[in-house]
Amino acid sequence: MKIALIDSGLGHLPAAAAVRRLRPDASLILSSDPGSMPWGPRTPEDLTAHALACARAAAEHRPDALIVACNTASVHALPALRAEFEPTLPVIGTVPAIKPATAAGGPVAIWATPATTGSDYQRGLIKDFADGVVATEVACPGLADAVERADESAIDEAIAAAAHVTPGDIGALVLGCTHYELVAERIRAAVQQPGLPPIALHGSAEAVAAQALRRIGAEPDPGAAPSEHLTVILSGAEAALPAAALVYAEGRALTAASPAPR
Image 1 (tube, one colour):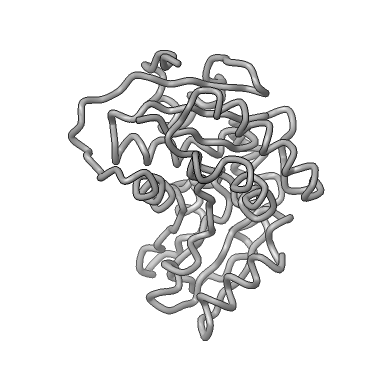
Image 2 (tube, rainbow, N blue to C red):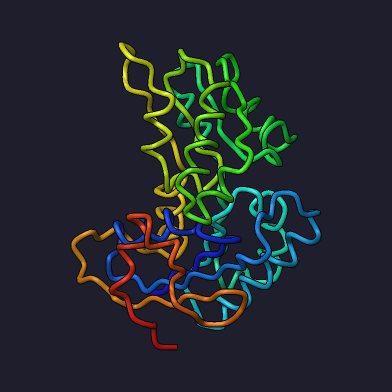
């Protein structure tokens, strides 16, 4: 079984780790274009072109499913990706976990990139799934870029700035950018108020990984013999996992992997 994941940069690591937890025997193909990130400020047409390039490079390795591990790319590029690759290659998009975060009521906060915050897409999700729940959108300028560079001080500054404008009474927080899941515990520590119940964090990685398995008719099997097959593609060329990825537990878990056979 081969699962491909695309993102502008390291945002595919949380979903890749989730796939490995559900199916340790899955071979992984990680395709990104870090030189083009961030994708958020790009026009939909430009973003779609970059996403298609990443997907085409991954598709050469004949995966069984393709995960678009980026919220912004899922908004703008998913129709083009599905038009090109389905039904031969199932394409799974990423949606901010607003629905599960609001299931227990509010209030909730939604951390996302400036390009996503306030967008018609995100406002639509809030309207559909958070009706009657107090949901505060919080833009996080620079956080995804800082995570991509593994710049510790910039990560701390961006998290502190977002936490400062996050209401103190929230019970749940949506991680509306896949990069944010790599620093989830640092985010939790920044927003948790003393004396209040633990804040629930809601990312998309686990749900996306599970949906990819469903689309190819595979059942989770956490006890399967681990695969060491990993293919990393940077801007269309096979490469090693970027050094910044090894700062995060999700990246370090892949360091023992070897290139997957074509």
